[in-house]
View 1 (spheres, rainbow, N blue to C red):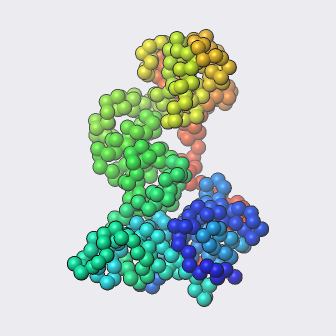
View 2 (view 1 turned 60 degrees about the vertical axis):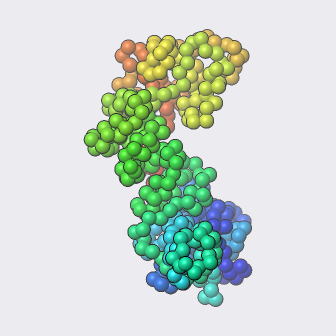
View 3 (view 1 turned 180 degrees about the horizontal axis):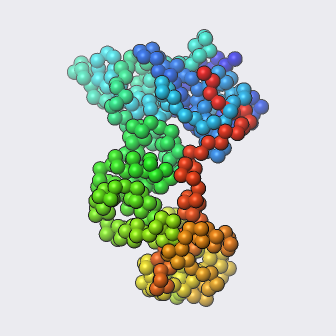
Length: 427
């Protein structure tokens, strides 16, 4: 039986709580609450969405919840670990109800939902009971309630607008600001198309660029195409050039060219060069902006470069040594200095003395199978890529190769194998 103490909890306070089984084993974290709309009646709470190890989100029905309060959630029963998929009549509280605008039934104005309370009835079923809202503009000159004032109202005191109205994403972004881009992208994939675009449109350009790079190509195209063209060009500038090129390659040529024209010339030039290569070649996979230094640079300078926060671990693992110019395509490529070597030598040591000259660079027209074979053979995270003139034009990282070799739907692949004490939906 479900615990009757307390009988009311606010959803925002449940987010991120650990979900345990009766023996105290942690199953995952609560990420959302699923309700079933019932017309004018308060929605019925049918379950919770739990993020289990592996970043997969699964559904746990309320019939399996034995205790729920502001500190933890305890459930029981055997359920099958299947990725949560929203059904037609279901609504996600955090993703779809928070930030939604409602009209107050007393005619005093409108408000925005910031939190929702759920109550357990004598039947042991849970229902939405209260809304914590922030007032918008007042429609009544006699109203004493000021704009931005918060209050708790009954569900029946708010008139829900049509689901076609735009929905803000302020509360959703606030509760998910600490998510890594890959995890945020997964949360976006679980939303309806409309809600996905609403949330994406409110992200800062840099954050949106990072998230886009973690989404399947179809979702990338959908979101980018929904943006104003000038903002879309700004977002592309924030993306890694190879990811921006991959995305532009999925767009109609006229749309891609328009966006390239709006980008800063330097960023657009890098992307244009990548678009000239076949997608299954080293040139089509590479990034044109690895860490490149001259042979006279020191170990101290190299370490300062690889400390940059925006640099991926794969790119930070190697310093590419070349003659000027140091922007790709560079002067003559000389070799690679591995991060591990930097840690073995004093700060003033010149990088030219540490170059690994035994590592053969890849041709920019080399097939992806050759690139993968070289990375595996030498246990490397990245490889230099050169053109026919021996100039460094970029670097291929192991994550780029994996991204290309894995199935297109690898980000949403389902593992249907049962996992301890978790499982499929009831009803």
